Image 1 (cartoon, rainbow, N blue to C red):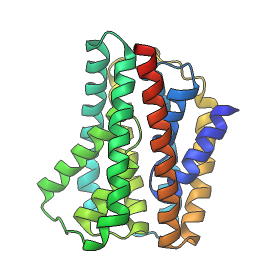
Image 2 (image 1 turned 90 degrees about the vertical axis):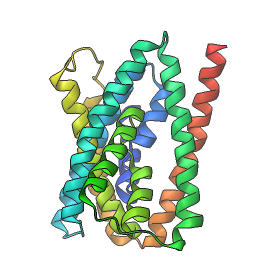
Image 3 (image 1 turned 60 degrees about the vertical axis):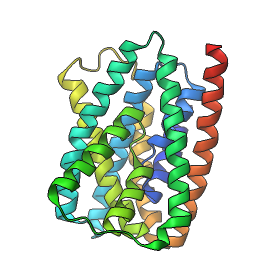
Image 4 (image 1 turned 120 degrees about the vertical axis):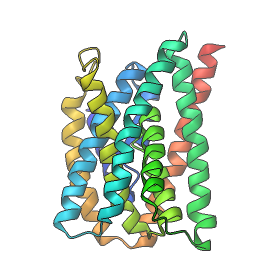
Length: 261
């Protein structure tokens, strides 16, 4: 029941704000579950992938605005980046003697990224963005986003929102939909890489029986709320979620440091 509630809340908020849900699921499972860091990463990716797929289907049904050319190019990059991020995760997990170091690194990177995202979305965004059109640069942007999202195991929604508004001059609601498209492809790339290499037999994935249905429900309901909310209200949900996850990530980091010392 705990995993169902966590996934439902995360995917509901993630679908509304474009944050994806993984940035909520990952740090909470780090804090509250006994799963290994690799299993948490896969559980988060499956759940976020399902939420993104469900929300996108609803948005497309409602004729939401998606930049097709941009979406294809940046999503191709995100798929490659998803594979790279997963390989980097496996490398560090094997290189360091304990998985706690990887979890600590993930939480610290997440905290710094979220603080930067919070500052940009509320303090610097009004200065205006760019309108990137070079296809190589767009694919490269997707690779970078996919790599970060896959390595941290969060879906990448907060970073996607900043990049889409900064480099492509999107509004909050338009960036939300296109962020979910990126999340779908980056997490899809990561899961495909795992499937084609070692498979999923080494992971303890029983919680997916609760998390996948919650992701579907959260994605659908979140898409409905997103349609009714104003851009200002979406930003309020975005800000509240970011602040909460920064707190959880810092608590995780302190707990891990206490264990290591």
